[in-house]
Image (cartoon, rainbow, N blue to C red):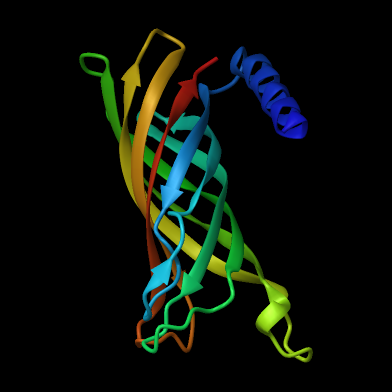
Length: 197
């Protein structure tokens, strides 16, 4: 937690210095909740929760470029038709995304935006191994391409601060999915704060 706070402080200070001479910047942080990446069989477990941090820079009028780093955490158990359950599956998913954002000018303290982000996700997973054969791996890390269309609304508190409500759909193309489809779709919502130096 201390490292996260240190990084956030460094980013805020750097953004303030850069904003004095360069394009307008914004830094945001949010709490997020994302639908599970699992499918096909009923599962039990808490809704995946996590965090979201982004930096955006205006490049032309209402167009900006944004970079996002996020993490989501999930523990699930598959419920089989015979009533049995799988071993708990613990997943940590991190995303490193960037892309264009188009925003409306603030009206009555509200501004709306839409964005399409592209990048990679990294999934680190582990399974409680008490019920697994010794030859079966109980952990792993996988990387995937992903893109994430979405949008949201900023509610201004004052000239520098705003509250953000955001929703998007993270699409991760994969082969061999059952039932057959081209990508895993994960709906995500986030609520946080925005700082504009």
